[in-house]
Amino acid sequence: MIQTEQSTTSSLLECAKKSVLFTANRPPIVMERGEGMYMWDTDGNRYLDFVGGWAVASLGHSPSALQKALTSQAATLVHASPGYYNRPMIEFAELLTSVSGMDKAFFASSGAEANESAIKLARKHGTVNLNGAYEIITLTNSFHGRSLATMSATGKTVWKDLFSPKVDGFKHVPINDLDACFAAVTNQTCAIMIELVQGEGGVHSVDESYLYGIRKICDMYGIMLIFDEIQTGLGRTGKLFACEHYGIQPDVMTLGKGIGAGFPLSAMLAKSKFDLFEPGDQGGTYTGAPLAMAVGYAVLTELLERNLAANAKTQGNYLISKLKELTSELSISHIRGKGLLLAFDTPAGTATELAAICQREGLLINSLNSSTIRLVPPLIVSQQDIDTMLGILRKAFKQLSTC
Ligand SMILES: Cc1ncc(COP(=O)(O)O)c(C=O)c1O
Image 1 (cartoon, helix red, strand yellow):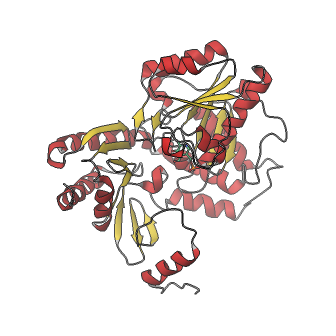
Image 2 (cartoon, rainbow, N blue to C red):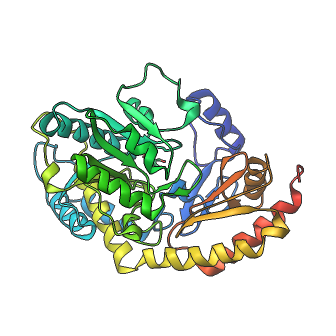
Image 3 (cartoon, rainbow, N blue to C red):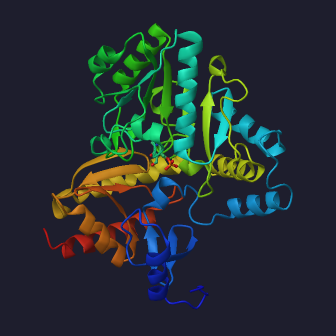
């Protein structure tokens, strides 16, 4: 059946069941429109969005900066081929490297691709500079993507045997355990790759002294230090990049999610001394494509001009303080995170039901597991949005059957 604008939600859902490959349990609603902090479904229901497309909608839904960049670039040059430079590619690389303190940029479309690129660059470093070292140390509970190599890098225990055999050469060590990391280093280690706040893994931050120790290990042995800032980057944690909280720079940084504000875009940034790829080593049909580059430039400019990292800090602190006031009323605990990458624990087994009730009440929140809620709203969120969100959350807690 061909769907029309008049198709009912139930007929759309029937069609989805028939023709969309099953990969996720989705609620029986169909999203149709977005503006600012809100999305609307095909029945006209409005949702206050504290999921932000999984920490993607940095500027809110359908932001005008993105619309303008898309229409203007689409009328100029959509695609040039990765075999040529194009103007927005150069301008975006220049802006991104200047604000990040990194030197060189490679562009892709998803976080997994940016991390694949970093993994390949780490192995190239091993080949060129470390006598063929190829092992990469990552953290238990980390998340780096869904391609085979990035799934192998990921430290989720439930993924351990998924799609075996895994890509060889990844070792996982517990977060904030410097001795364990040190013990895992051998003459085969070419890189250490970490998220500074584990987003999918439950919103756990690395400690300052730990990160300092990791940087020292890397410097001592010539190991490449990679920060996966795909979720933490571009203002999410209250600084433009999470590494600014620690005053420690990586050799390679990966970015995704908020960098395109909803348009598929990611980047791998590297220091000059790791500009090691030769022609043929890395690329991709859509790398540095003009349309994506124009979006990235417009999104980053808007983030900087509106100082949305500072808003993330202010509103994040406000949200944390309000949640703390509600700990005993709602039986929530372990309120944690930085800026607008926040989480709290709910009574055992209640998080999924809580998120479902909130959705019925017009609020989108994300249950990371059966007892953890993650909050990653657009960086434009206001105090008033937070008050509205807390009102719905309190109402939802009262409806929990398991409490
Ligand atoms: C830290 C981190 N790295 C990598 C990824 C993968 O990004 P993508 O889903 O765009 O491939 C994610 C996605 O959640 C992430 O949070």
